[in-house]
Length: 462
Image 1 (spheres, rainbow, N blue to C red):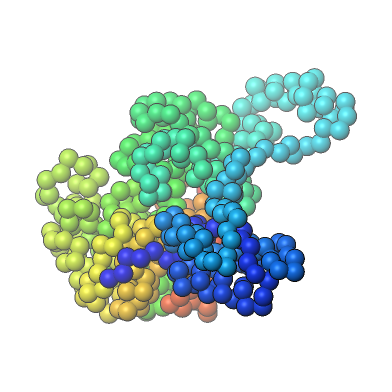
Image 2 (tube, rainbow, N blue to C red):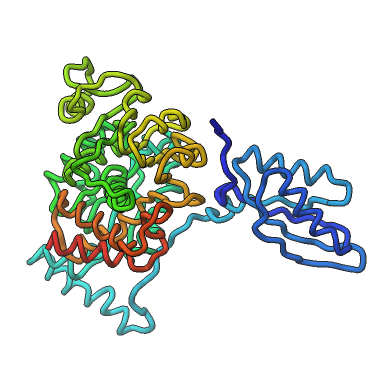
C-alpha cells in the first residue's frame, strides 16, 4: 500500500538559476528535476548572453521536504548555479488574498453628498423605520461572514484564529469568484461556545448569511443550532452541509454509472465528526438503504457505551444489523465507502471484499484513506478530495451557489430540502449522457454549476 504523496501545485517552487547556453542544457535541467520526482510545469528564459542563460524553472513537488530535496539536487549540479528559490504558495499569500473595493464612484461633491453626509442620513432613517430595508439598501444584501475559531482547520487541527486566516481568506475569494458573493473572514479568539454564539449574533446585522468554518465537533453542532434559533439569516456550517451536498451529488451519479438505486445500497462511512454526521443525515434524507458509521474505535452501534451524544445517536439511528467490528469488517459487502477521517486506513484487500462494483470516496486531505491507484484496482469508481485526481469532491461546488441562492431569496434559514435540491443541481450539471466512472461531478470551474445550485436553492427557500 503506497503512502507517498503526489506532486501538487500546493508545493510548487520557482527556481531561478544560471546554466550554460548550449542547446542541451534545458533538457538536462528538466531531466534532473523529473528524476527527483518533481513535475516541471514551466521553464522560462529571463536573460542570456553568449555563454550563460538565466531561467526560471517552476515545478510541482509533493511536500516541503521534497521541495528542499529538489533544490539541494540542483545546487549540487556542477553546471547549474541556483540564484533564488521561491515558494509560489507563500508568494500568493503575501499581503493576503482579498481586498475591499467601492461599488459606487466618488468623483465629486455630489457623489460624496449622496454616499456620505448629508444624503446617507435619509437612508439610515429609512432602515430605522423598516429594518428589513437593510437587506435592500446595505451590503447585507450580498455579504456573508466566514466565521471560525481555528479549532479544526483543514487537516491541521486546532491551530488558532490567526493561523486559520489564510483558509478563511481563500474561502472568501472562492465566494466571490464562483458566486459573486462578498464574504469576509471573522476569526474569533475564543473557543467558548457561549462567547462564539454571542459574538456572531452581535455581528449579524452586517451580514445576509453566516458560514461557519473549521469549528471542531461536537461544539460546531451546538453553535450552529443556537445561532439558527437566534438569527433571522441563514446559518450554514460548510464542513457539514457543503461536504454532504457534494457527496450526495457525486454518489447520485456514481450509482447511475454502476446501475444501483439508493434504497438498495449500504454505505460504510468512516469519520463521525461534523462532515461524516452531516453526510449520513443527508444520505438518509435521499433514501439510502443503510449506513454503518465507523470511527476510531470501530463501528458505532446501538447499546454502545460512549459519552459522545452524537456517536450514541448515530449508533442507534443507523447500522441496522448492529455490526460492532472494525473498519475492515464494516466495509465487507458494502456498496459504498465514504471516508472523511485519516490517511491510509483502508487497504486494497478491504475494497476487494466490498459488494460488486464498489464505490470508494476517500476524502481525507491531503492524503486519502487509501491511495487512489490502489483503490482503482478493485473499485468501479474512486473519488478523492484532491484536485490532481479525477472526481474531486470539493465544497466549492456547493457553497458559492448555495449562498447565492439564499441571498437572492432573502432567506431566513436553511433546511435539508434545499440541500437535496443543491445536490441534484450539481449532479445534473454532469448530465446522464456524459456521466462515467471518471466524471461523476462537474469541474469546480464549470460556469454552469453555481447558477444552477443558486436557482435550485432559491426555488426551495423563497
